[in-house]
Length: 322
Image (spheres, rainbow, N blue to C red):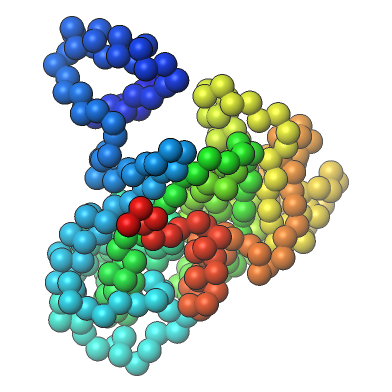
């Protein structure tokens, strides 16, 4: 039996209905509880289920954000980001021109990424300019909301599959035009289910693309090892090495090579960390083609066709129960 507790909201699950009922009865003798039956909503997340299929979505929450931005009647967009800002980005948007509104909506969008990793990169980019949003940022926020308008019923499916972990790691070198810091992106699948993803600007400026990729590898390794230990808490052993997919051959060569060169001393800590887990068979670095790198969606704006291709690989889809 497992309990997920968030303040005064509790989810209980297990493989013995009688034991769960007995436990709830014991809790009721100590605390005042309200049993809501089978789960359909939790912390604003809608949970639909049918046999071995689940679907997590935040359609109501997404709709409230669209209404808050006064864009309920806007045309939808096919891509949450754009690779090049059009000329119209320099003109002020009347509905989102207030910095307070920008901060409020961008903050609200961060919670929407719980079930919408397809907008995670766009939200991360907007969140970096909360202190002083420019007209281009207002344009990008409006574009993101237009994308959400057209995909308001999208969410994260959970289907019965294998319990093998697979991680994808990527980095966009010196992507920030001001600080020249790189962006790390990685995601982990449990079987065919997406269970973890992260987009983060790296804390240090990388001198080479290999270094930025290696910093992303180190972060992905830490997250993967944590997930592996979490699975063990659920009595799900993961004895074989986790496949960590990387599309940078130099970073892979550096990780596998036990000889550490002086010219790469500035990444020595990350090198030792990744090498240790490789040598212990906790993970295995697997080369992957750039076009097959799923984590690419977390590191940079993409063309619409490329974005949709990777969104499908993330398994993000519309509500299958409609």
